[in-house]
Picture 1 (tube, helix red, strand yellow):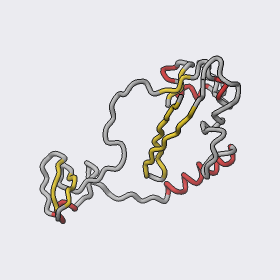
Picture 2: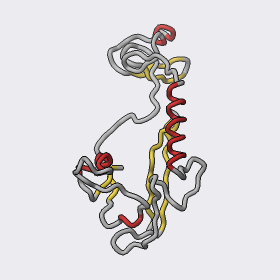
Picture 3: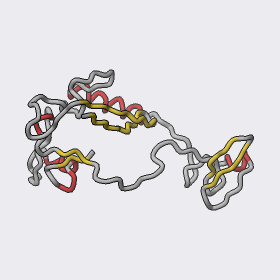
Picture 4: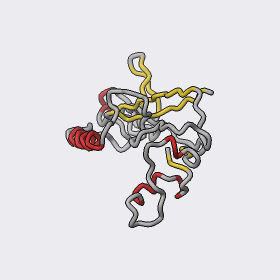
Length: 173
């Protein structure tokens, strides 16, 4: 049985889509007792350059991310996300709607104010069914899972938001 999983990952503002194919794995009450997913949510048997191996590495990554994002200076956008002043430069007119313009044999997307608009990322969101990981009966494949608890004094209470609809059988994807 082939299972294919897709993951959308944001790396430094660029979005990448990865597929993971898993063959001949049976999960459930009678599954092999071996662990498949490490405490950081990564496949145990997979090796890759950016794989987190310790809490200290994860803390270093958080620090590096803070430094990286603190030094980013994003451009100024108009209220629709277009490049201010570009409409005037290229001769585009505001129409009040997103629209397509031709310029030197190129097709360009223009925002309602008449400015150039470029979109890279999620351009539509719709309901495609439940997106969660069923945990109940598969706990043995995880190296670690937070305890589902309604007691605020429990150390794992902070992870309750990861559970879909406060249901201890499902984790949000």
